[in-house]
Length: 63
Image 1 (tube, rainbow, N blue to C red):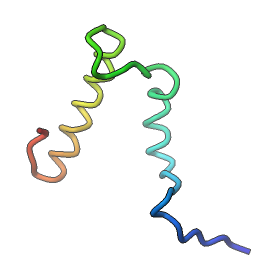
Image 2: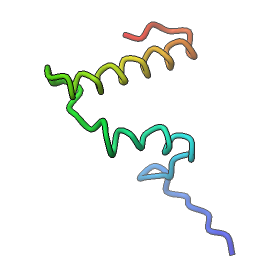
Image 3: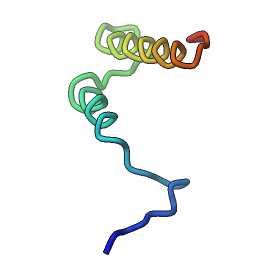
């Protein structure tokens, strides 16, 4: 029997490619992106790159 989950408003699973993209941020790059130190700054840079990619797909500005 297949399970059909109808409560995606509360939570949902992520696509495998999303999970794979996020693994480094759960294991290696977990610093506070707002921090001034290098460890957090690396995460901040990744967030900025992600914003730029999404903005480009939407034809918008990253800000």
